[in-house]
Length: 254
Image 1 (cartoon, rainbow, N blue to C red):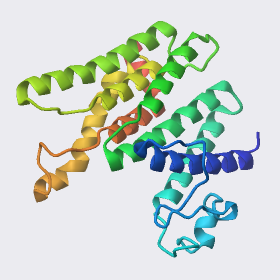
Image 2 (image 1 turned 180 degrees about the vertical axis):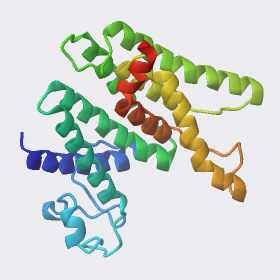
Image 3 (image 1 turned 135 degrees about the vertical axis):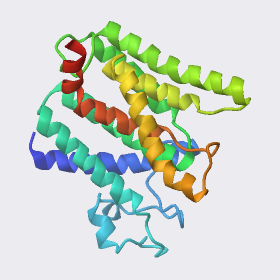
Image 4 (image 1 turned 180 degrees about the horizontal axis):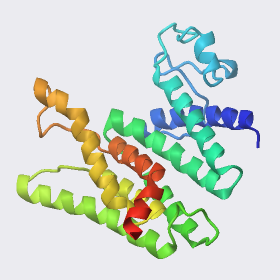
């Protein structure tokens, strides 16, 4: 598989990610119906829907209504291209590559949906839980992935930790502190990378969230009861775990 093909593939799936990011929160289908401008609702001609290229050819505006196109579209496509290219670079043509591309695409969609709408679609978390657990039965997969017992414990542990936090917060404050979408997302991470990923991801996601909201707390534009999307921080922490897993395992084994 040539790198140029991977880049094209990343762009196409990045374009599909944008469809999911826009339609899933509205509970619309993502496989049927042509893409359309969210401003004027006119259908987009195929040559205006070429990843990245069309964005520049159109001058960052819709051909029909001339209203600006959100930069999110090109950002998502570029991120997905880079993700696919890096995965291919490190793992070549393999089942591991396909699996990680599936996971990275799902993470990308969840990241932007939660960031904007404060929801994490069940369609993505449930499907990734199933894939994450089923792949653990293949003994020939990359060392990144745990065996089926570790995967199962990781998934249950991930869900249970967030569920316990939600229950505790509700008992103390008499209101919801986190959503079950976060619990399902951490369960996905546990199913994919085993129980050892859960403490790491939970700690660093909390650190990332604190770093991000601290300026707002200082400016008093937010307080400790303000709603923030936690899914993106879980995803960033999971990526950090993935790239540092070798060193982490050495520490645990020693």
